[in-house]
Length: 112
Length: 115
View (cartoon, one colour):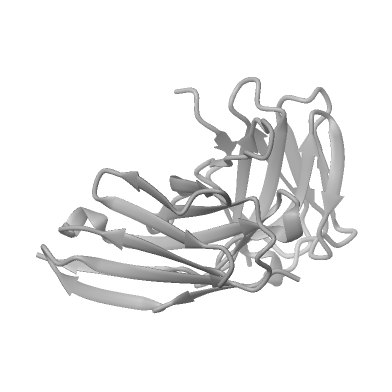
């Protein structure tokens, strides 16, 4: 059974800092991994999807890496801004199938 | 707006009542998913459809829950005899699976409060 863990659970940083969010998963037989952002009381916004054949994916100030063999992914946020404050969720398909298994998320606060 | 939409956004009900939620996916997406999210947790899978066929149901989906996608477009999720433990955010997502890619796009969710 696929399990996803995200560390840290919460993070508070001053504006302008670069930061890394971590995600680990137990079953490395995945097709892809997805990072989402969730604002309080809102739905999920897809940030990045990394295919299993890729090692990195970039979008603006976001860079996600995937090490499938070790069951790890990181989301790097450069030059953080207060508008980046949200919960970041990592998700992988469950045992090769498509319903997603999510971590509990990392709650990020960027202080101006 | 061509994103996933959900209705209602908020629902407050008394224990024992039935509730129904609706999800309209992105047009032409063939897959539609329902997830449930409680406070401080990530979303948990409930069920999904490919076109009108319900392909998988989670053990979380007790017999009080039923979902339909009658014409392969919108979907409804009904909860009968609601319990306080059903209080959660119910999220809908849709996707168009191509090869091994299945990027899911989420709606804003329906927040259910059972009193």
